[in-house]
Length: 118
Image 1 (cartoon, rainbow, N blue to C red):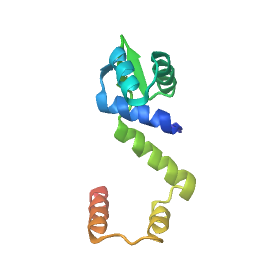
Image 2: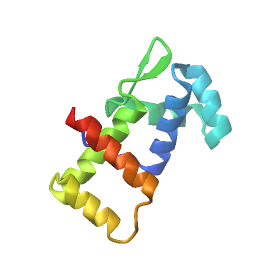
Image 3: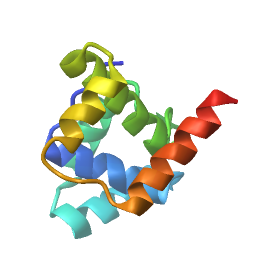
């Protein structure tokens, strides 16, 4: 996937995920209120995110092609792959080297591992 989003694009994407499906006219109003954008800015940023395969604008209705959860899952996988050679244990070792995990966090991780075994 390898989709890179700047901070503004990320805020815009979150707004769409929160409101979808949303009419393009309503999206323009939301962006005016939220970001102070003009109509042309909204459509320019939307077009870029559609070209990246995240959203679609069909018949004036904007919706996602991939969910926010799926987007973050893919980004997390890319990060682990690029930074730790795909090694989840290496990632966890690095993540926990500077901070201790709480009992609750450890229990949640154990639960995830147990579910992955099935």
